[in-house]
Length: 179
Image (tube, rainbow, N blue to C red; front, side, top):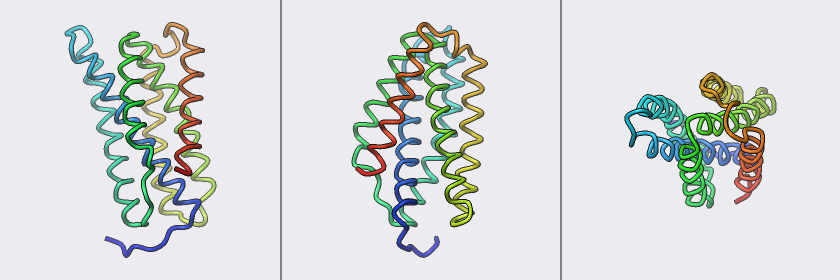
């Protein structure tokens, strides 16, 4: 393990937010799976969500290590993001497969843009961390594409649902930067 050093405050914010985001993504997928795994006709959807959750868990594990290595505290909002993420997963799954895909598409759109901006901001200062963010961004784009192919944009009230979820993501990012 690398020697722990003090991390600059902006990168600490990024790591805190990204850790929380991956934590939230895992919670969303778990909430959706809790609904879809209960019915034979949606078991394939539950399996697809389990695969995406496993990728998000790998990201979360990486951020767990980065927080320790760089001595960055996680957000105090973790319990709230857990409940909110799981609840969002359950609610969108209860609305149907397309709504669950719309949730994924909305979240991953915000997150991939967020990672992209972070890569640009730190690529010269911390190229190794920027490369990690870039790789995770690619995984998020893949999840977004799966959601679009699954009918995200055909979900009931797609525009409203997508905008509400994206707005929630932006608020969560701002709060998590500081708390």
